[in-house]
Length: 223
Image (tube, rainbow, N blue to C red):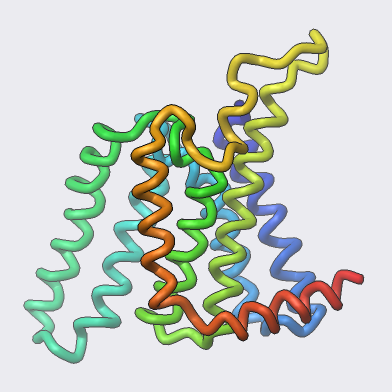
């Protein structure tokens, strides 16, 4: 499989290309393009959230903890006094970094369900829901953010599959087929649960008409 530096470099390159091309094509402004590039880069390491003791998993949970604090401030600043807000946000950081991370490591398996297209779609949908419902982003921008993370996620999966092909020996390694798979064949129960979670997000997604408009404009731009 590709290492952390390779995954991050490829995702940063993909995010830079996406942000710049979309800006030049009038899909988003420069201020909107930067977060899209960052989301693509983050998506490029996100599948390794199940790789215990890796550079990726530490960076992922540190980033998630910071994002949890930011969302907490946005949602709670009008309801809580500064002292209470500080405690609440501190609890969010500790909860994600020191509680959620060990639990996730305990119940996840590397190259399992998080290395699948189902997981990629779920993470993209969660990103769009968070942007639209929690951060008050316009529907079109929220969809763009979800697609940016999905792009980075798919770049990671593709790299892992490419590194499973030994071109010098003209053979396939045992890891071939464990990255780009629709779902985790070895754990159908977990895959069904993830599918149900993804389906439940449909109620909170931005309007689908905005996604259709974005894809239509994007396809016109790339012709």
